[in-house]
Image: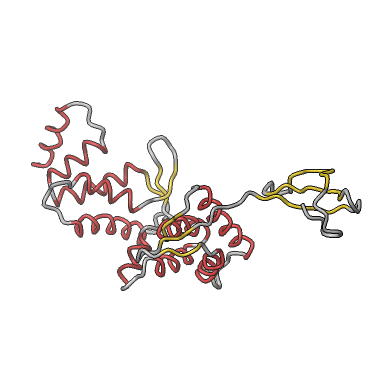
Length: 251
């Protein structure tokens, strides 16, 4: 190492220790020619990270661009600068931990959205509108539906979890698989249930009550989908239970 005082290349390491963040090694050196001491830092060389854009072009990763996008989404929102800086660090750390030379812009956007959803829902929707290039209000509505609700669902084992439209809709879709029921009608069931609960200011509902609400609507829509859903919701154990449920439809 070249001495900053006399230019000699002869030196001796007299002390070596990691920095506080563990990302470098601090070494105290003594020049063997002029006897003066100086400090050097040893870092791990990072492989340049390239970002693959949606059009296929590549550009070097820019922390400033990532930070600017997050700060803009959180403008006038109750998120401190320190928290946003920490978010950038978290995303950046996960990107470099992938140990790849190339990462898609989509992967970065998904990482940011995942973390913004936990910090601020308004900032999340703002970022999503740019990242996903919203073209109309329906796309905003679709994204809003993906956010956790204040409604809580009490499971059979007593566990409480947020109501998720996505999970409810998935159960309805499974029941209606290969049945003459459109996606729009399935979504209408999920949205109708949520609107009914919201109108009544319900903040907590049991999974049993939620299941009954779905069955009530499926019964009017499609008998096969209704029985399918009932078989899962009521945990059928015998074929006879299917027959009993079908007979109940005829009454």
